Image (tube, rainbow, N blue to C red):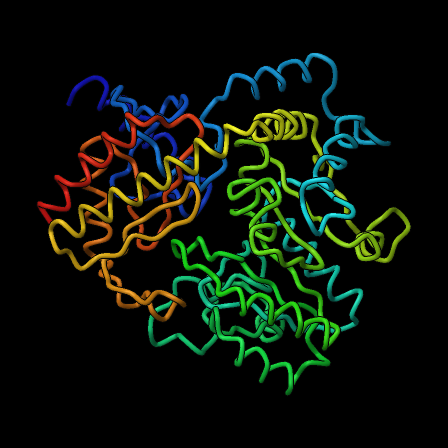
Length: 428
Protein backbone atom coordinates (compact mmCIF):
# COMPACT_ATOMS: atom_id res chain seq x y z
CA UNK A 1 0.00 0.00 0.00
CA UNK A 2 1.41 3.40 -0.96
CA UNK A 3 1.87 6.07 1.69
CA UNK A 4 -0.95 8.14 0.22
CA UNK A 5 -3.32 5.16 0.08
CA UNK A 6 -2.34 4.40 3.66
CA UNK A 7 -3.28 7.98 4.56
CA UNK A 8 -6.76 7.54 3.08
CA UNK A 9 -7.28 4.29 4.94
CA UNK A 10 -6.06 5.83 8.19
CA UNK A 11 -8.54 8.71 7.84
CA UNK A 12 -11.41 6.30 7.10
CA UNK A 13 -10.54 4.13 10.09
CA UNK A 14 -10.23 7.15 12.39
CA UNK A 15 -13.64 8.42 11.29
CA UNK A 16 -15.29 5.02 11.69
CA UNK A 17 -14.00 4.70 15.26
CA UNK A 18 -15.77 7.87 16.38
CA UNK A 19 -18.57 8.51 13.83
CA UNK A 20 -21.30 5.96 13.00
CA UNK A 21 -20.29 4.63 9.60
CA UNK A 22 -17.52 7.19 9.43
CA UNK A 23 -19.75 9.91 7.95
CA UNK A 24 -22.05 12.59 9.38
CA UNK A 25 -24.78 12.33 6.75
CA UNK A 26 -26.50 9.16 5.58
CA UNK A 27 -25.88 9.85 1.89
CA UNK A 28 -22.09 10.26 2.08
CA UNK A 29 -20.95 6.65 2.30
CA UNK A 30 -20.76 5.33 -1.26
CA UNK A 31 -18.58 2.95 -3.22
CA UNK A 32 -15.84 3.81 -3.98
CA UNK A 33 -15.31 5.23 -0.49
CA UNK A 34 -12.86 8.04 -1.22
CA UNK A 35 -11.25 10.59 1.07
CA UNK A 36 -11.19 14.10 -0.38
CA UNK A 37 -8.67 16.56 1.02
CA UNK A 38 -8.98 19.57 -1.29
CA UNK A 39 -11.66 21.33 -3.32
CA UNK A 40 -10.90 24.18 -5.73
CA UNK A 41 -13.11 25.58 -8.47
CA UNK A 42 -14.49 22.72 -10.55
CA UNK A 43 -12.21 20.09 -9.01
CA UNK A 44 -11.89 17.91 -5.94
CA UNK A 45 -8.73 16.04 -4.96
CA UNK A 46 -8.44 12.80 -3.01
CA UNK A 47 -5.79 11.94 -0.42
CA UNK A 48 -3.70 10.33 -3.14
CA UNK A 49 -3.61 13.68 -4.93
CA UNK A 50 -5.79 12.51 -7.83
CA UNK A 51 -7.90 15.25 -9.42
CA UNK A 52 -11.54 14.76 -10.31
CA UNK A 53 -13.82 17.08 -12.27
CA UNK A 54 -16.59 17.46 -9.72
CA UNK A 55 -20.22 17.21 -10.85
CA UNK A 56 -21.57 15.94 -7.54
CA UNK A 57 -20.88 19.35 -5.98
CA UNK A 58 -22.02 18.33 -2.49
CA UNK A 59 -25.58 17.85 -3.82
CA UNK A 60 -25.48 21.30 -5.38
CA UNK A 61 -24.32 24.17 -3.12
CA UNK A 62 -21.10 25.41 -4.82
CA UNK A 63 -22.84 26.97 -7.83
CA UNK A 64 -19.88 29.30 -8.37
CA UNK A 65 -17.36 26.51 -7.81
CA UNK A 66 -15.51 25.39 -4.69
CA UNK A 67 -13.74 28.01 -2.56
CA UNK A 68 -14.77 30.94 -4.75
CA UNK A 69 -12.29 33.72 -3.96
CA UNK A 70 -14.79 36.60 -4.00
CA UNK A 71 -17.15 34.77 -1.66
CA UNK A 72 -14.36 33.68 0.67
CA UNK A 73 -12.91 37.18 0.78
CA UNK A 74 -16.30 38.62 1.78
CA UNK A 75 -16.56 36.03 4.54
CA UNK A 76 -13.05 36.84 5.81
CA UNK A 77 -13.81 40.58 5.84
CA UNK A 78 -17.06 39.98 7.70
CA UNK A 79 -15.44 37.74 10.31
CA UNK A 80 -12.88 40.44 11.02
CA UNK A 81 -15.76 42.65 12.18
CA UNK A 82 -18.52 40.45 13.60
CA UNK A 83 -19.50 36.90 14.45
CA UNK A 84 -22.52 35.60 16.36
CA UNK A 85 -24.19 38.29 18.48
CA UNK A 86 -27.62 36.71 18.81
CA UNK A 87 -29.71 39.75 19.63
CA UNK A 88 -31.27 42.57 17.65
CA UNK A 89 -31.18 43.28 13.92
CA UNK A 90 -28.12 42.89 11.71
CA UNK A 91 -27.24 45.14 8.78
CA UNK A 92 -26.04 42.32 6.50
CA UNK A 93 -29.14 40.26 7.24
CA UNK A 94 -31.37 43.21 6.37
CA UNK A 95 -29.50 43.85 3.12
CA UNK A 96 -29.76 40.21 2.05
CA UNK A 97 -33.46 39.98 2.85
CA UNK A 98 -34.14 43.12 0.82
CA UNK A 99 -32.25 41.75 -2.21
CA UNK A 100 -34.03 38.41 -2.01
CA UNK A 101 -37.40 40.16 -1.93
CA UNK A 102 -36.38 41.95 -5.14
CA UNK A 103 -35.49 38.73 -6.96
CA UNK A 104 -37.92 36.05 -5.74
CA UNK A 105 -41.51 36.47 -6.99
CA UNK A 106 -43.27 35.21 -3.84
CA UNK A 107 -40.92 36.89 -1.35
CA UNK A 108 -42.61 39.73 0.49
CA UNK A 109 -40.69 38.85 3.64
CA UNK A 110 -37.87 36.42 4.47
CA UNK A 111 -36.73 34.38 7.47
CA UNK A 112 -33.27 32.80 7.68
CA UNK A 113 -32.17 29.46 9.11
CA UNK A 114 -29.35 27.00 8.40
CA UNK A 115 -30.58 24.05 6.33
CA UNK A 116 -33.26 23.12 3.86
CA UNK A 117 -34.79 20.67 6.33
CA UNK A 118 -35.19 23.46 8.89
CA UNK A 119 -36.83 25.68 6.28
CA UNK A 120 -39.37 23.08 5.16
CA UNK A 121 -40.10 22.17 8.78
CA UNK A 122 -40.90 25.81 9.52
CA UNK A 123 -43.00 26.14 6.35
CA UNK A 124 -45.21 23.19 7.29
CA UNK A 125 -45.61 24.35 10.89
CA UNK A 126 -46.63 27.78 9.64
CA UNK A 127 -49.12 26.30 7.16
CA UNK A 128 -50.74 24.20 9.86
CA UNK A 129 -50.93 27.20 12.18
CA UNK A 130 -52.59 29.57 9.73
CA UNK A 131 -55.07 27.00 8.40
CA UNK A 132 -55.84 25.16 11.62
CA UNK A 133 -55.47 21.91 9.65
CA UNK A 134 -53.17 18.90 10.06
CA UNK A 135 -52.75 17.08 6.74
CA UNK A 136 -50.30 17.88 3.99
CA UNK A 137 -49.79 16.60 0.45
CA UNK A 138 -46.36 15.69 -0.93
CA UNK A 139 -45.44 13.89 -4.15
CA UNK A 140 -43.69 10.60 -4.80
CA UNK A 141 -40.03 11.17 -5.64
CA UNK A 142 -39.78 14.55 -3.92
CA UNK A 143 -37.45 15.01 -0.94
CA UNK A 144 -38.01 17.81 1.54
CA UNK A 145 -35.69 16.99 4.43
CA UNK A 146 -35.33 14.66 7.38
CA UNK A 147 -38.31 15.49 9.62
CA UNK A 148 -41.19 13.13 10.30
CA UNK A 149 -43.88 14.79 8.18
CA UNK A 150 -42.08 14.41 4.87
CA UNK A 151 -39.26 11.85 5.18
CA UNK A 152 -41.01 9.31 2.98
CA UNK A 153 -41.61 8.15 -0.58
CA UNK A 154 -38.52 9.39 -2.41
CA UNK A 155 -36.72 6.55 -4.24
CA UNK A 156 -39.28 3.86 -3.38
CA UNK A 157 -39.40 0.25 -4.59
CA UNK A 158 -42.20 -0.57 -7.02
CA UNK A 159 -44.24 -2.40 -4.37
CA UNK A 160 -44.33 0.75 -2.21
CA UNK A 161 -45.92 3.03 -4.81
CA UNK A 162 -49.31 4.14 -3.59
CA UNK A 163 -48.31 3.26 0.00
CA UNK A 164 -46.46 5.05 2.79
CA UNK A 165 -42.71 4.48 2.51
CA UNK A 166 -41.05 6.08 5.59
CA UNK A 167 -37.28 6.36 5.32
CA UNK A 168 -36.44 6.07 9.00
CA UNK A 169 -37.32 4.23 12.15
CA UNK A 170 -38.59 6.39 14.99
CA UNK A 171 -40.92 8.58 12.91
CA UNK A 172 -44.15 9.47 14.72
CA UNK A 173 -46.99 7.41 13.22
CA UNK A 174 -49.43 10.29 13.52
CA UNK A 175 -47.07 12.54 11.55
CA UNK A 176 -46.71 9.91 8.83
CA UNK A 177 -50.46 9.34 8.76
CA UNK A 178 -51.17 13.03 8.22
CA UNK A 179 -49.02 13.13 5.07
CA UNK A 180 -50.71 12.13 1.82
CA UNK A 181 -48.41 11.02 -1.02
CA UNK A 182 -49.60 11.53 -4.61
CA UNK A 183 -48.01 10.98 -8.04
CA UNK A 184 -46.01 13.89 -9.47
CA UNK A 185 -47.58 15.61 -12.50
CA UNK A 186 -50.98 14.00 -11.74
CA UNK A 187 -53.34 16.93 -11.24
CA UNK A 188 -56.43 14.74 -11.28
CA UNK A 189 -55.18 12.79 -8.25
CA UNK A 190 -54.75 16.10 -6.39
CA UNK A 191 -58.19 17.28 -7.43
CA UNK A 192 -59.85 14.09 -6.25
CA UNK A 193 -57.98 14.17 -2.93
CA UNK A 194 -59.01 17.77 -2.29
CA UNK A 195 -62.62 17.01 -3.17
CA UNK A 196 -62.60 14.34 -0.48
CA UNK A 197 -60.34 15.91 2.17
CA UNK A 198 -59.83 19.53 1.13
CA UNK A 199 -60.95 20.97 4.47
CA UNK A 200 -58.25 18.95 6.22
CA UNK A 201 -55.32 19.86 3.94
CA UNK A 202 -53.05 22.54 5.43
CA UNK A 203 -50.53 22.60 2.60
CA UNK A 204 -49.28 21.13 -0.63
CA UNK A 205 -45.48 21.01 -0.73
CA UNK A 206 -43.77 20.49 -4.06
CA UNK A 207 -40.21 20.18 -5.32
CA UNK A 208 -40.77 22.16 -8.51
CA UNK A 209 -38.30 19.86 -10.25
CA UNK A 210 -37.81 16.61 -8.32
CA UNK A 211 -34.04 16.77 -8.53
CA UNK A 212 -33.63 14.12 -5.87
CA UNK A 213 -34.62 11.60 -8.53
CA UNK A 214 -32.55 13.32 -11.22
CA UNK A 215 -34.55 15.76 -13.30
CA UNK A 216 -38.26 15.19 -13.93
CA UNK A 217 -39.69 18.41 -15.31
CA UNK A 218 -43.12 19.55 -14.12
CA UNK A 219 -45.91 20.06 -16.60
CA UNK A 220 -46.80 23.78 -16.38
CA UNK A 221 -50.51 22.89 -16.31
CA UNK A 222 -49.86 20.68 -13.27
CA UNK A 223 -48.19 23.47 -11.30
CA UNK A 224 -50.80 26.03 -12.34
CA UNK A 225 -53.50 23.59 -11.34
CA UNK A 226 -51.95 23.27 -7.88
CA UNK A 227 -51.98 27.05 -7.56
CA UNK A 228 -55.66 27.21 -8.53
CA UNK A 229 -56.73 24.30 -6.31
CA UNK A 230 -54.91 25.52 -3.21
CA UNK A 231 -56.62 28.89 -3.55
CA UNK A 232 -59.98 27.18 -4.01
CA UNK A 233 -59.58 25.01 -0.91
CA UNK A 234 -57.70 27.49 1.29
CA UNK A 235 -54.50 25.41 1.52
CA UNK A 236 -50.99 26.87 1.55
CA UNK A 237 -48.91 26.21 -1.58
CA UNK A 238 -45.22 25.66 -0.74
CA UNK A 239 -42.54 25.46 -3.43
CA UNK A 240 -39.45 23.68 -2.10
CA UNK A 241 -36.65 25.33 -4.10
CA UNK A 242 -33.82 24.15 -1.86
CA UNK A 243 -32.12 22.74 -4.97
CA UNK A 244 -33.56 24.93 -7.73
CA UNK A 245 -33.24 28.25 -5.90
CA UNK A 246 -30.45 30.39 -7.45
CA UNK A 247 -29.26 27.36 -9.45
CA UNK A 248 -32.02 27.90 -12.02
CA UNK A 249 -32.06 31.66 -11.70
CA UNK A 250 -32.09 34.28 -8.96
CA UNK A 251 -35.87 34.08 -8.81
CA UNK A 252 -35.87 30.31 -8.62
CA UNK A 253 -37.77 28.00 -10.95
CA UNK A 254 -41.03 29.72 -9.90
CA UNK A 255 -39.90 32.73 -11.92
CA UNK A 256 -39.17 30.48 -14.92
CA UNK A 257 -42.70 29.06 -14.72
CA UNK A 258 -44.36 32.35 -13.86
CA UNK A 259 -46.33 30.74 -11.03
CA UNK A 260 -46.12 32.22 -7.52
CA UNK A 261 -46.55 30.10 -4.36
CA UNK A 262 -47.55 31.28 -0.90
CA UNK A 263 -44.25 30.17 0.62
CA UNK A 264 -40.92 29.00 -0.74
CA UNK A 265 -37.81 27.46 0.77
CA UNK A 266 -34.27 27.86 -0.56
CA UNK A 267 -30.85 26.70 0.64
CA UNK A 268 -27.80 24.98 -0.91
CA UNK A 269 -26.64 27.27 -3.74
CA UNK A 270 -27.79 30.55 -2.21
CA UNK A 271 -24.55 30.91 -0.20
CA UNK A 272 -22.25 28.87 -2.48
CA UNK A 273 -21.63 26.17 0.10
CA UNK A 274 -21.81 28.10 3.35
CA UNK A 275 -24.67 27.06 5.66
CA UNK A 276 -27.72 29.22 4.99
CA UNK A 277 -31.36 28.57 4.23
CA UNK A 278 -34.46 30.69 4.03
CA UNK A 279 -38.21 30.64 4.20
CA UNK A 280 -39.84 33.38 2.12
CA UNK A 281 -43.34 34.26 1.06
CA UNK A 282 -46.43 36.28 1.80
CA UNK A 283 -45.98 38.88 4.51
CA UNK A 284 -49.27 38.05 6.20
CA UNK A 285 -48.10 34.46 6.65
CA UNK A 286 -44.54 35.16 7.75
CA UNK A 287 -45.68 37.78 10.24
CA UNK A 288 -47.05 34.91 12.33
CA UNK A 289 -43.38 34.07 13.01
CA UNK A 290 -42.35 37.49 14.33
CA UNK A 291 -41.46 37.85 18.02
CA UNK A 292 -44.74 37.65 19.91
CA UNK A 293 -46.46 35.91 17.03
CA UNK A 294 -48.24 32.60 17.41
CA UNK A 295 -45.68 30.56 15.42
CA UNK A 296 -42.32 30.11 17.12
CA UNK A 297 -39.26 30.52 14.89
CA UNK A 298 -35.80 30.77 16.44
CA UNK A 299 -32.22 29.55 16.25
CA UNK A 300 -28.88 30.67 17.67
CA UNK A 301 -27.17 30.42 14.29
CA UNK A 302 -30.02 31.79 12.15
CA UNK A 303 -28.67 34.46 9.77
CA UNK A 304 -25.10 33.81 10.91
CA UNK A 305 -22.90 36.55 9.42
CA UNK A 306 -20.76 33.99 7.58
CA UNK A 307 -23.65 32.56 5.58
CA UNK A 308 -25.24 35.95 5.03
CA UNK A 309 -22.00 37.50 3.77
CA UNK A 310 -21.44 34.52 1.47
CA UNK A 311 -24.96 34.85 0.09
CA UNK A 312 -24.55 38.58 -0.60
CA UNK A 313 -21.32 37.93 -2.49
CA UNK A 314 -22.93 35.02 -4.38
CA UNK A 315 -25.88 37.23 -5.37
CA UNK A 316 -23.60 39.94 -6.71
CA UNK A 317 -21.74 37.45 -8.90
CA UNK A 318 -24.95 35.88 -10.20
CA UNK A 319 -26.39 39.30 -11.00
CA UNK A 320 -23.68 39.69 -13.66
CA UNK A 321 -25.22 38.87 -17.03
CA UNK A 322 -22.40 36.56 -18.06
CA UNK A 323 -22.75 34.24 -15.05
CA UNK A 324 -25.91 32.33 -15.93
CA UNK A 325 -25.06 32.55 -19.63
CA UNK A 326 -21.83 30.65 -18.91
CA UNK A 327 -23.38 28.05 -16.59
CA UNK A 328 -26.45 27.37 -18.73
CA UNK A 329 -24.34 27.33 -21.90
CA UNK A 330 -22.10 24.61 -20.49
CA UNK A 331 -25.15 22.68 -19.35
CA UNK A 332 -26.67 22.77 -22.83
CA UNK A 333 -23.37 21.69 -24.36
CA UNK A 334 -23.05 18.77 -21.94
CA UNK A 335 -26.59 17.53 -22.54
CA UNK A 336 -26.27 17.83 -26.32
CA UNK A 337 -22.91 16.06 -26.29
CA UNK A 338 -24.34 13.17 -24.28
CA UNK A 339 -27.34 12.97 -26.61
CA UNK A 340 -24.99 12.76 -29.58
CA UNK A 341 -23.04 9.89 -27.99
CA UNK A 342 -26.22 7.98 -27.14
CA UNK A 343 -27.48 8.39 -30.69
CA UNK A 344 -24.11 7.42 -32.16
CA UNK A 345 -24.08 4.08 -30.36
CA UNK A 346 -27.89 3.53 -30.43
CA UNK A 347 -27.97 3.21 -26.65
CA UNK A 348 -31.11 2.67 -24.59
CA UNK A 349 -30.60 5.86 -22.60
CA UNK A 350 -32.07 9.34 -22.13
CA UNK A 351 -30.38 12.62 -21.24
CA UNK A 352 -32.29 14.83 -18.81
CA UNK A 353 -31.65 18.15 -17.13
CA UNK A 354 -32.27 21.86 -17.00
CA UNK A 355 -29.88 24.79 -16.86
CA UNK A 356 -26.75 23.58 -15.07
CA UNK A 357 -28.09 20.12 -14.20
CA UNK A 358 -27.68 16.99 -16.30
CA UNK A 359 -27.74 13.20 -16.06
CA UNK A 360 -28.13 10.08 -18.16
CA UNK A 361 -30.98 7.68 -17.37
CA UNK A 362 -30.50 4.18 -18.76
CA UNK A 363 -34.03 3.94 -20.11
CA UNK A 364 -36.19 5.38 -22.86
CA UNK A 365 -38.83 8.13 -22.54
CA UNK A 366 -41.35 9.17 -21.39
CA UNK A 367 -40.18 10.49 -18.02
CA UNK A 368 -43.03 12.34 -16.34
CA UNK A 369 -43.20 10.82 -12.86
CA UNK A 370 -41.29 8.63 -10.46
CA UNK A 371 -43.15 5.54 -11.68
CA UNK A 372 -41.54 6.02 -15.09
CA UNK A 373 -38.09 5.89 -13.48
CA UNK A 374 -38.67 2.33 -12.30
CA UNK A 375 -37.67 1.40 -15.86
CA UNK A 376 -34.19 2.86 -15.32
CA UNK A 377 -31.42 0.26 -15.32
CA UNK A 378 -30.04 1.05 -11.86
CA UNK A 379 -27.17 -1.42 -12.16
CA UNK A 380 -25.94 0.16 -15.38
CA UNK A 381 -26.55 3.67 -13.99
CA UNK A 382 -24.22 3.06 -11.02
CA UNK A 383 -21.67 1.08 -13.05
CA UNK A 384 -21.40 3.95 -15.55
CA UNK A 385 -20.66 6.43 -12.78
CA UNK A 386 -18.10 4.24 -11.07
CA UNK A 387 -16.25 3.89 -14.37
CA UNK A 388 -16.39 7.67 -14.80
CA UNK A 389 -14.91 8.12 -11.31
CA UNK A 390 -12.08 5.72 -12.14
CA UNK A 391 -11.26 8.01 -15.07
CA UNK A 392 -11.32 11.24 -13.03
CA UNK A 393 -14.94 12.39 -13.50
CA UNK A 394 -16.87 12.47 -10.22
CA UNK A 395 -20.59 11.83 -10.51
CA UNK A 396 -22.21 10.46 -7.35
CA UNK A 397 -22.49 6.68 -7.87
CA UNK A 398 -26.05 6.39 -6.54
CA UNK A 399 -29.11 5.57 -8.62
CA UNK A 400 -31.03 8.53 -10.09
CA UNK A 401 -28.81 11.26 -8.61
CA UNK A 402 -28.29 14.46 -10.61
CA UNK A 403 -25.06 16.17 -11.70
CA UNK A 404 -24.21 19.87 -11.35
CA UNK A 405 -22.16 22.31 -13.43
CA UNK A 406 -20.70 25.39 -11.75
CA UNK A 407 -19.48 28.77 -12.89
CA UNK A 408 -15.93 27.46 -12.39
CA UNK A 409 -16.31 24.70 -14.99
CA UNK A 410 -14.81 25.43 -18.41
CA UNK A 411 -15.42 24.32 -21.97
CA UNK A 412 -12.31 22.17 -21.62
CA UNK A 413 -13.87 20.41 -18.61
CA UNK A 414 -16.99 19.63 -20.62
CA UNK A 415 -14.93 18.37 -23.56
CA UNK A 416 -12.86 16.12 -21.28
CA UNK A 417 -16.02 14.80 -19.62
CA UNK A 418 -17.68 14.00 -22.92
CA UNK A 419 -14.56 12.22 -24.14
CA UNK A 420 -14.51 10.03 -21.05
CA UNK A 421 -18.29 9.51 -21.20
CA UNK A 422 -18.03 8.26 -24.79
CA UNK A 423 -15.32 5.77 -23.84
CA UNK A 424 -17.35 4.48 -20.87
CA UNK A 425 -20.66 4.32 -22.74
CA UNK A 426 -19.01 2.53 -25.63
CA UNK A 427 -17.57 0.02 -23.16
CA UNK A 428 -20.90 -0.49 -21.44
